[in-house]
Image 1: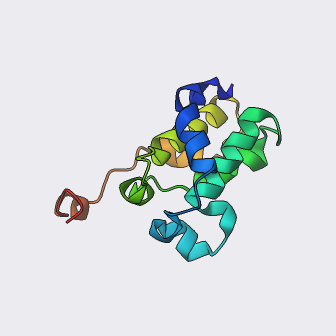
Image 2: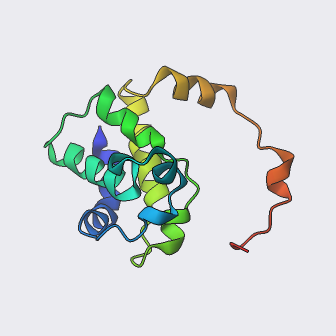
Length: 126
């Protein structure tokens, strides 16, 4: 089921061997103060699941739900890795395998509408 992330093998491998240069950019890692939810931690967990070093189960799949998709890690990545896209594909694989958390699935079914405040934000990282 994790074949969905096959197209991201280079990005995953590059991220796993990086010295965590994007850690400071991730708001989730900053808020939770846990290595496992840094972009590096999430990508390493995904690499371990793809390689069979950890089981592809609900516990593993739920770690990928910590990524908000804000792309701050991608903006500062020296390798230009599309970390949010990779983790979104990992979450898709977990949803297809019925491993995604009920809360995430309910949120997705609700099709939340973006706040009008987002439309007022400047584009291009300004």
